[in-house]
Amino acid sequence: MKRRNGNLLGLVYMAPALLFVAVFVLYPFEQLILTSFTSQSLLGGSRFIGLANYLQAFHDPTFLRALGFTIKYTVIITPILMILGYLLALLTASNRPVLQFARGVIFMPVVIGLGASSLLWYWLFDQQVGLFDKALVDLHIASKMIVWWTDANWALSGVIISVVWKVVGFGMLLFVASIQAISPDVIEASLIDGATYWQRVRMIYLPLTARTILLVTLISAIGSMLAFDQFYIMTLGGPIGQTFTAVYWMYQSSFISFKLGYGDAQAVILTVIIMIGAAIQIALTAKRGQA
Amino acid sequence: MSELALPARRVAASDSRAIRAAAPVRYLVAAVALFIAALMIAPVALSFFASIKPSADAVAIPPTYLPRTLSLENYWKIIHYQAGLWTYVSNSLIVAVMAIVFVLALCVPAGYGLARFKFRGKEVLFLMLLLPLMIPYQALLSPLYLMFAKIGLANTHFGLAIIHTMLQLPFSIYLMRNSFEGVPRELEEAARIDGAGSFQCFWRVSLPLTVPGMITVALFAFITSWNEFLGALVVMNRETQFTVPIMLVGVRTGHMFSVDWGALQAGIIVSIIPCLAIYLFLQKYYVSGLLSGAVK
Image (cartoon, rainbow over the protein chains, first blue to last red):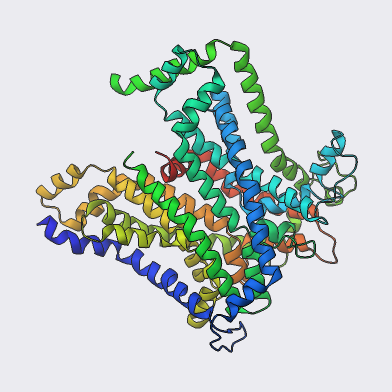
């Protein structure tokens, strides 16, 4: 009897969430695609213009530069986060109280908002009152207070430092969990074989935590491809528009220049890129249950 | 009981054996870890110290690391910023509470449906519920903005809460599905023999056992909503509807190009406190949720 009702009843329980996704995700997504073929303005007025927005996007130097910059940001920050996160995980992997405490502190910035942390670092990086700059001078690392935001490379470095501080603990925590999940037998066997610590890391830890590494890499890369807050707050896209990210330029097109149709075409292009990464992420998470 | 204790003892044994060979290394590892922890906490500590400096000291050049005299001037200023701090805090709280309620109302039954029933097409529907992972919400803000304007949700807590709900949906459904799968089926079958109906099995038997999962879901919904920036920037156009992160950017922008650094730090500290409190006091739920989302 349970089986017969199961079909319908299961659906009933899922219905509210399904309805929500249909109304607030699928329907807007359809609207997004439709609008991307129009000249829709935020101020009203819209007509069908075919692929013109897409053609414009691929000839818009600012959009292309924003997309290129976002990829550059992602390609630089992702390995930094993975390597530092993994080193911190190795450092704090055992459950000694002092290491658990350190882990807890290193993870703490993850719960702080990206907006708040970006403003915090904007202050630390200030060329007049910034204490990060002052510390660099006091430690004789820098000769004078650094001006971070007038040069694109310095601006990118500043954002990367602040974001690494904010999210490195996330990868660390997931890596620690997956290192601790390795069977102690495997580690004991390697100890009997006389493997050195770094041999053990290379031959046992890294291969046995490979899936977590891939998963965290994807989560980080997707997050970085969608970066907005940190640039909106710290660099404002500057200097001279060199640090606009894809989402930032999309926001700028839609809500500052009122060109919704054009902004939506950019959104569709970005969504296609994200979908590929997210599909792999979902496949990895689903496979987890079987392993 | 002894079986349960066994793995833990073996982990400990391998742990100590791995390190026994080099006792000084233990101290070195601890020292390095503590040093890094100190570096990580420094920005927040410095921000806190700046927030309790007198206003003039907070903008002094060159700056000092520690306050020379203590003052709550900056907090006084941030409390009276524009429409008043409480306006922004209450906006953020209302949106967050709504988001928590929506997320629970949608994801608890969905998780139950996914965990307890077998039917054709279930996995496809599950994938549909994971769609917000694949379609970034940043891309949907422009159609949602038009839609909200049409149905009167622009500039409302309700509208922003919907966006925050969407953000949390995949993770929360995933977590609730796992929670319900962790409740033994036999419990419901026993209740059924005692004459409980299908809904009673859900409400009276399984639901109470997934409270830890629900707490985790609620915590994450709160932290996401409290911290979310872009959606609030797009949806809330009226000063009195701003949430805390948007207000903070306003404080930074200041007037006449002079930033009131002290007030900004006070605002940052206020915005950090709820998240830190949750992290400190409810760490168990927070960390377990994070791990169940990605690793075993």
